[in-house]
Image 1 (cartoon, one colour):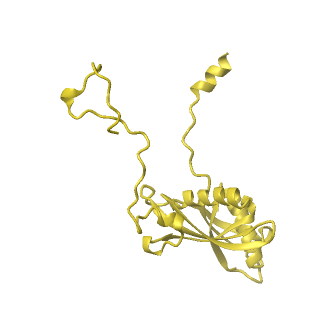
Image 2 (tube, helix red, strand yellow):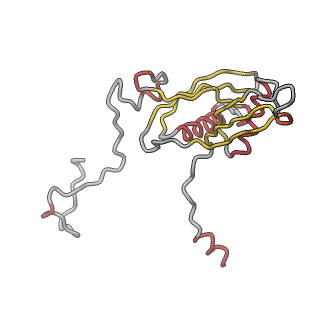
Length: 194
């Protein structure tokens, strides 16, 4: 009985975005032959900094002759956006692995932040294309101006072709004036005018 009571008391916190943006700087470990090695930096989206570092080594080992065993991370910082109150258009260029092979794709999202757009991307790719998170690579993400938006799903919210309007689902009858507002009516209301 007490366990049920505790479950009711605990309220769920609002869902924060799952994927966060990280800026990682790394290089090859300095050696006698190479005392000042080339420094590389990447912007990555990951659930936490440990996975972001792992992704950094995954990409760097494929691009350059540096791997985790002979490399070092100089900095790992989370990037926070300035404005997360206004809605923006984001274009995301991706590469993903399906059951048949590798594909390149471009997706557009209307969100308040890049992190939320990346969240929406992972959710959409998982549901529509059955792409698992490790099989998805973000090549580039950019804010897109209203004039440059390509996808119909995003254009419909911009009001380019016709103004954006939403149906009123729950129509509440209101009184014409305050003088007519009473708790009880002596006559049935006439709904034929609605």
